[in-house]
Image (cartoon, rainbow, N blue to C red; front, side, top):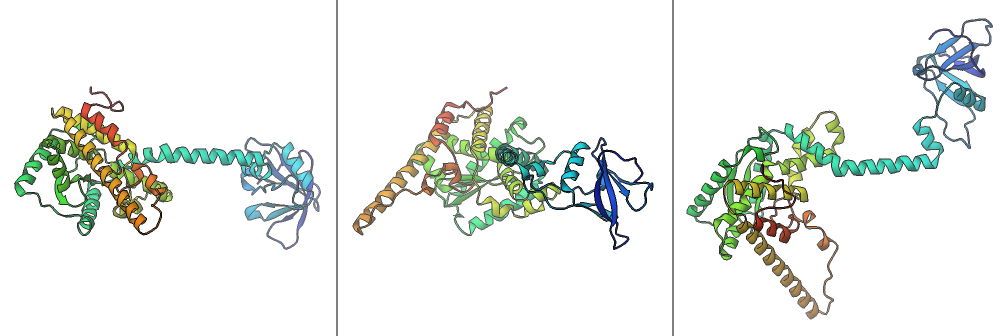
Length: 403
């Protein structure tokens, strides 16, 4: 606080300084400053006494809630120095404007519907853009700080849960498992470091065999790749070489190398625990990773990245990708045939019972990428036919050209 000469129109007011229960009559002046008006209180009972000055930052300036219905009294918060009451509201507003004060965005939103609608529209667009582009980018960057040890812990917990439910021990002969394991290890050893998004990321890649879940393969964070007996049998049924299986495994290795699962979990955390991330606390994300993992499906971008990774890795190892494309297409056709047969059986059963045939629900029409869990080879993989053709050709339009 300090002293200042009167400036502009003076507005009558009552100052409750907190030192006395009686209000002090004052004349209120406003002086323009670079940061905003300063408040000058001239004591009425002491003519000639030095005025009391409050800078812009020392005052809790009241907001105008409505231009059409102005408040009957303005109360100015002087913080440690009490408060100021002004009955001449119109004079106060005029003096504020003359001193260079401008209404805040909050005031303009409260007083003008166009401003409120405009700000709301900008907020909606901003949130949509952040959801579409910001959260994937943030998740990609934050994933750099997630340790491999956490990924392997999550993978172990998830696999244990699945072994108690959908998965069963593999029935493939031990010799066959060792044969595929050797080719998997050889492929991992030939992986160029340039294919990895995160330089210095060194997970331990392992291949595990299970039965159940049909013809399938999936990757868990930290390097665990699981292949089902059904996938090996599907390749054998189509008369395809093991290059088909190795191609599928290359795709799953791509999910690990690109850390897709971890990125999805972190992205979920960015959306649900933004405050925790703002405070630098990712414990909420990593502690719920195992439960979140089982409910997510890879995005189209992740699938395409994994396809491109497989094409590049197989090309580097001088292995064909066509068998992998044929295998995916055959599995998709088998699943489609089974689905049609199932619908036909349900319709026949309904007809016998005198009920109408079931109609396709909205859930059945969902995009493939939102249907199944993260480990599904096909249900979460978009555009299977298109992808299979690209893999047969050994290249895709969206894949970067090899250097």
